[in-house]
Length: 272
Image (cartoon, rainbow, N blue to C red; front, side, top):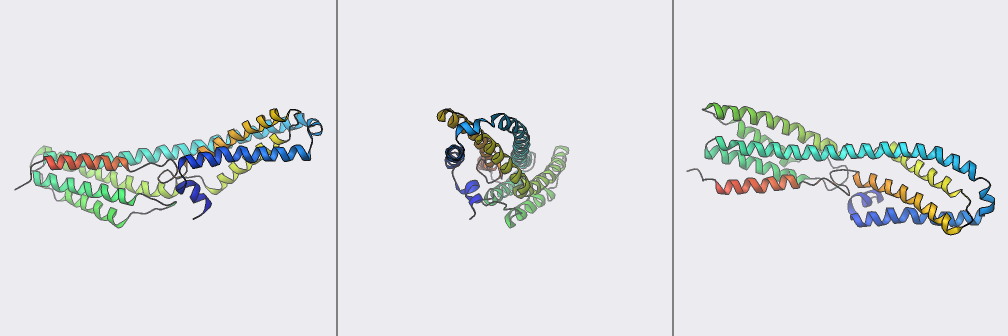
């Protein structure tokens, strides 16, 4: 297990908050204490104008890098959440729409949908980068297509249901494939993380160069800058790997719709 895996998957949310929002300011304060020993404030104060100019320039670069990264991660997260909900609701609509069919056909379709939902929940990734359909997902999705394909509609409403259900299952299949793709790709790539780390470190480094006579004011300033950097890093970690990260999208929508379908199924008459 890598350190990164520990931060993203194994560590609880409060632990991630404590380590990042507490660790970054602590390291910055310790570095500031060392800097005050190596370069006393009267000497450092001579370069405050240059340091201030460099911090302004670096701050703009840092803001652009972090803003782009957080925006990209948030788009990934919301897209994964939307796709998962849409997939669950579409496949549930196939089951509920089967009410126009005979009781036996309705039961077959609903049971196929329930089996698919359970396969999705059982697959839900628990490790970073876990991708690919499970055998149960492939089998239950084929079973669902077969259940719809074997229906023999004898009225216009039933014919319309079969056509709509087939279209919806096609969308479900596409959303399923997209969910598996996102499980391994909806996160920042290594070059972006390097850019984030470098700009964060450079921003903190130039903040350390200011010479302030008051040590408490100096430590307060660097703590504030470090907290801003820590919050941004925390946001990126929070949204990293949207299917199994710190703030992951859960399969709860599939579980809840399965419960509703099972209740509907138990209330429906058993075909003779």
